[in-house]
Picture 1 (tube, rainbow, N blue to C red):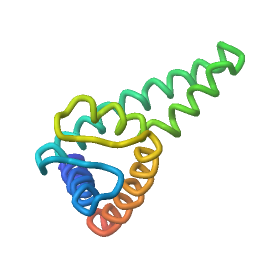
Picture 2: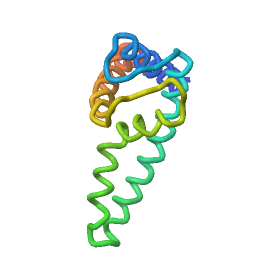
Picture 3: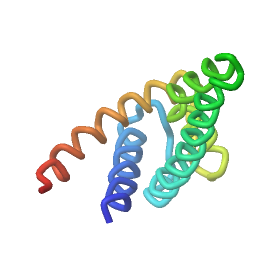
Picture 4: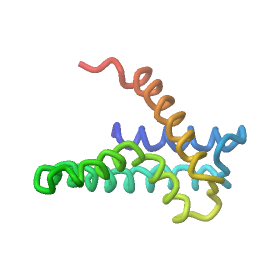
Length: 121
């Protein structure tokens, strides 16, 4: 239930940024909700791949550590950038906009998580 709420909040935040004209253009709220789901799936796959690369660093004498760390850091912007290609009506102008949007979205989601999910026992 918590994961579904996070997807909905992320979709609403993405649609809000599209509505005020920052970093992204989304045609409808449905596209924003689907984009948040697609981004979550792609980001999960990227995190698994970066974990495998970092874990394989001990077998490759550290050669795969650097790509694993880079994928870990840029996983969310890559997921946003690639997620737009799966949907009609979603447009992010540049990868730099995806990076800035991912930072703003991460901060916004952290604030929402503290407000709505912060008091668990």
